[in-house]
Image 1 (tube, helix red, strand yellow):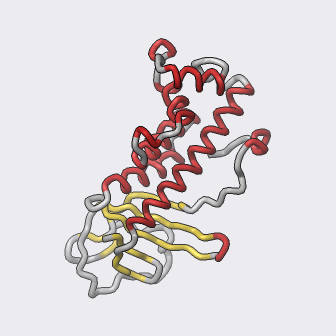
Image 2 (image 1 turned 60 degrees about the horizontal axis):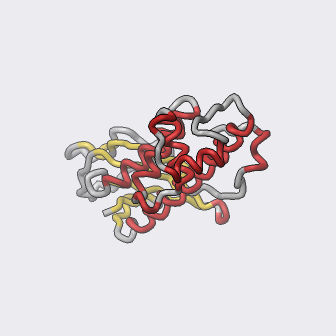
Amino acid sequence: MNVPTQFHRYLDLGYEFKISDCFPTIEIEGNSKTWSRVPKFYQGKSHALDKAISYQFTLSLFVKIIYKKVSDCEFYIIPKERFPKLFLAGKQFDEARLSGTRFPKYMTLFKAYETLTTPKERDIIFSSTRHSISHTTTQLTRSNVINTLKELYDGLEIDLSKFKHRKSFYKVFWSLLIETDRLLYSKIQQASKEFKLLYPNLKLLK
């Protein structure tokens, strides 16, 4: 998300995002074991799957994780059938970049966050902002949501024509982006204890 420069001083710009790219793709098709959609990180290269690989799988999530401090990266293939929540969260995380204006982007990103968390784990600030976007003010009845919105936006409705609202919204959005990236990376690391190495740096989660 492009945040106007005037709000940068309010954001945690020192955070290093791990999920560099994340999108659904059909990797292997039938017995031919050919790429039906070559991930863009492999386009124009001579990479090919080992002919000995016997895996046949359909819709999967292709993920690139970067480690800036050591100038390295890893690539993962996460089958939807085996990891449905992880697949969905990653798909939504990617879609947030393509969701148009600020509110649709926030709602799509929140869906990814929601997929990765339980109700008790969710931050009331993230949830309250989501409630304000998706509900009319008369539908907002929970006291903790009302109090949080009043603290953030001086009321129950977010009006991005007002400076304070824009400032608060961008801070919340940026924090949600960081937390979703952190959760997605953590979940992938937990799931990657068992994997099949398809190609150097390309791991299929089992």
